[in-house]
Figure 1 (spheres, rainbow, N blue to C red):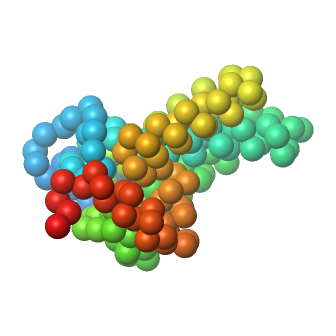
Figure 2 (cartoon, helix red, strand yellow; figure 1 turned 60 degrees about the vertical axis):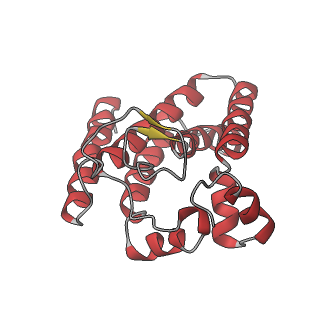
Figure 3 (cartoon, helix red, strand yellow; figure 1 turned 180 degrees about the vertical axis):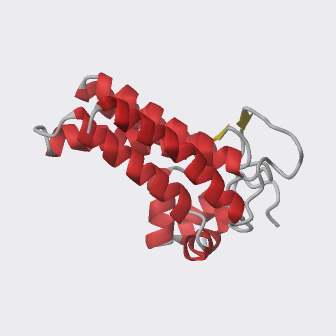
Length: 190
């Protein structure tokens, strides 16, 4: 597949994600009626509804990890194949994330209680952030990419109390100690 066709395929991901989520009933923008660049708390009602939030770092990491793991595990695989994997998994995740099965799995963790899914704007932005993570990591040296992974994960974990690793852990093997630590920042906790 030529790079031009690959970029066209990547661009078609935007209306595919937007159209699917809209048809499934997700709001185009936050139901608050505003569009914000950043929401700084995972406990804010606007989380996952605007352009960026702490979970944006997980989406950036999605792209970063595809570039990094592709480079380390499959060094003979070129840019086009890795970018196609990033695009397919990026589109796939934004759609699969909004199935009842996945939404219910997220809701089962206390930090995501009441989660109704992303707005269309947020899901499309997450997909674009993922591609940015891929391009950035593909252009960087491996050691710098590893440092970026650590910085993004540690920032999200210690400032927001949730990250890609913590979300995965709490979905697969919830720990009361982690939940209690996460909830210390929750302004709504009883």
